[in-house]
Amino acid sequence: MKKHILISGAGIAGLTVANFLAKQGHNVTVIDRSSSFSKAGFLISLKSFGVKIIDELGLTQNLQAESSPSETVHFVETNEEIIQSIEYDKMHENIERSVLVSRGGLHHVLYEAVKNDVNVLLDTTIAQLEENADNTKVTLSNGSRIVVDLVVVSEGLRSSTRERYFTNYQLEDFNTLYVGGKLKQNHEKRVGVFKVYIDVNRSLHIYPIAEDELAIQCYIRSSEDIDFIKNNASSILKDSFGDYNPEVKHLLQSLQDNGLFFMDKMGMVNAPTLHNGRLVLLGDAGFCPTALSGMGASLSIYGAKALAHYIAEYPDDILTACNSYNTLMQPIVEKFQTNAKNNAASFLPKSEAELEKFVNGFRAADDKAVQKIMTEPIVLTKDQENFILN
Ligand SMILES: Cc1cc2nc3c(=O)[nH]c(=O)nc-3n(C[C@H](O)[C@H](O)[C@H](O)COP(=O)(O)OP(=O)(O)OC[C@H]3O[C@@H](n4cnc5c(N)ncnc54)[C@H](O)[C@@H]3O)c2cc1C
Image (cartoon, rainbow, N blue to C red; front, side):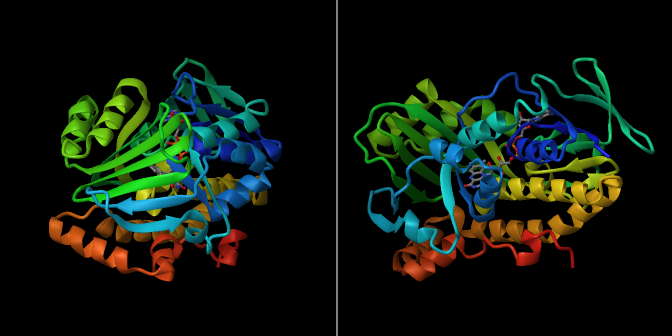
């Protein structure tokens, strides 16, 4: 029987599951607290099974159209000395595929694909939920009431519905803030050739993605809370990179003055159970693995397909569908989060001594060792790819 499903959060995860569920013929309503969407956002590298699922949805060409060229990445010290130069093709040899795209670009592809098949309400959130034996009554922030069979919570890292209706989760603070954004500006840099500064407690990534556009990402160790960080964005950026060369300082200033940028702290979400009755967590809201895993978007897309798979398998038993989804996801999430935690140790060296150790190791690494560092852990088993529970 066809179900009425509410998806709260029209991000990467929410739109992907909406697409799969609409294809199954369910009545899908998607809400998002934003009043509009933009193509802005940090660059992500969508890899392996994430790209495969986009393929299955018939969206490969649209994704390619939004993607950014990627050729080489130079990892450098602050004095511009190159530590390692890695070609993207080589780096991703042992993952089937990888596409570099802004979060906004990926979002645009997913939204365009689904917007005519589902009911999308912007500027809308969940005001109240009341769960009954057979359904859930939802009051929305616009005052309307709907009765649904399932509520998918895909509101991202700082989900307020999770905060309200789930008690047994943890949001681990990685004491690292990130700033990611795009700047429309002519430049002399070669498109597709990127530079990553590796430094103590900070790192800066400059991506020329078009002749008139740069993407800039920074990571800074910080134990301040998120409100302080958002209120002091400008001085934090200035202080953190104040000793960098004038070109870098100018770029960061231009990003603040003219660019579109986003800032948050890295956090990891650990929810021992991904559902509470007819309320199910998906994507970063349920299992954010942080940017350190390099796989959050792929994991969100995979989770979306998995949830839709079990809803198709148990169309009249939503709770069993949610249980199966939870059983499948937990070990996968654990694997990606463990990997991210391991990466955290070397991601931002805490002292000059740590920096030197990391730089020396990285400089000496041959192609195989570099591939291992960058891509080895990104695999699912065949059973996991096919949603077979052991
Ligand atoms: C700096 C950085 C680099 C990254 N790099 C990569 C990478 O290279 N590869 C990769 O695979 N992943 C990467 N990721 C991770 C990836 O971006 C996320 O895992 C992915 O965007 C999660 O998708 P989501 O739909 O769960 O959440 P989001 O994309 O955050 O979407 C959440 C949506 O919910 C909405 N919302 C929020 N609260 C509410 C509410 N209360 N009610 C209704 N709507 C709400 C928001 O407006 C938003 O539209 C990176 C992340 C960061 C921060």
